[in-house]
Length: 273
Image (tube, rainbow, N blue to C red; front, top):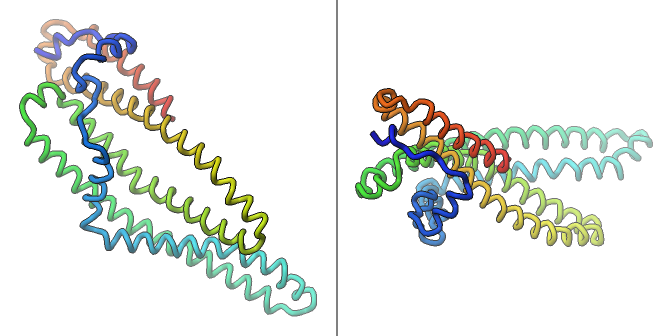
């Protein structure tokens, strides 16, 4: 009967005022110790640290092969092309062959990295889903009455999917960006100390911008996660109680409630994007 008598959804400002002294579970806030997310990720990756290290090595070598390309181009401009004009074709041919080898090595290493990291991420997600399922069964009945099944479904689907995106795409992009910055900074300092110093100094305001973005993104994505969970909760509870919904003709009222949640999800998801 719960789904048939669900109270109408209030406006977001009303919700925030009501939740100031209310149950934190209603705001999808779960008590967690500091650093719990990092500790969880480390525990998930610990059994496969060898494969993680191998994937990191592949990425290091791949970035080295990528960054070797500009060095070969610089050598071609400075040495090989003038030698070619003097009828010495050897240096330019060597540069062309070296560039093709670096490109081929970079592609092969990236393919190997994606293969290894994909298997690591799938094993991590397999372990995580099992942990969520086992932990959910071990929680008290009071927890399940306060933290609805729809939110648990959201945790085990949308949140796990977000972790999959992080493992398969986000970490790779982050590490590649950091490695590229390090390689390029070292090369610039080696080739031109003044230009390299300017490039390295530019990382200070860039770091501040990234930190500012990180704080804003955490707030926005937390709201998005809660909005997604609310949509799933409403859908699951309505479908589980479909008999009383039909018996008491709650279709239009539920549709109005769902429309509010759906619009809130659309707005928060748009903000996140």
